[in-house]
Image 1 (cartoon, rainbow over the protein chains, first blue to last red):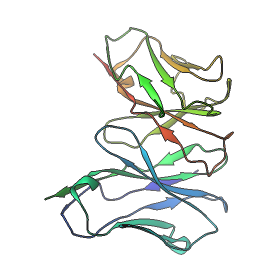
Image 2 (image 1 turned 45 degrees about the vertical axis):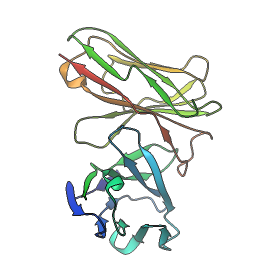
Image 3 (image 1 turned 180 degrees about the horizontal axis):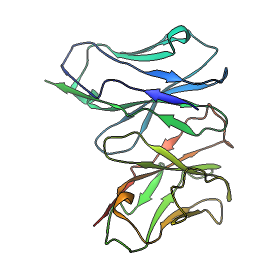
Length: 113
Length: 116
């Protein structure tokens, strides 16, 4: 069975601080995909990134970066110079087979001015 | 609109009532998923359609839950004899291709169901 753990329930930062959201996953499959989604107060989950299990190269997209380490089964997400608009719940998710996603419980990020 | 549309946005039901939740996916999207999100939790898979075929309903919590997508576009999730534990946000998602593990899903804003 697969499992995603997001140990941080809630994180509060002040604008312009850097913040890292942790994600640890469990799976016996060798081929899998990892995702991060953002859920703003409107409720709609917004896709941020997808990474397959064979590609451990870290990725940067603007203020966002992701660190994938198979050795520790982690896929952490860092926001640099956080902004108030980054306030949301962030979900890490795992997928095998057809694209049914197994989500973590989410981390609520509060960025104050 | 261009996104996944769900209605109603909010639904209040008395325990024992039947409810029907609608999902209008992005036009042309083959795959459609229903997820249930309890308060403070991540979404949990309920069921998956590829066009009109329901290929996986392993996540439906009981036989009171029923989903259909008769013409391969709009889908309805029906809950019979609602119970308080059914209170949650029901999210619909669609994707363009037949289910692939790397597919990006597009989610609707959900229907928040409250059973009193």
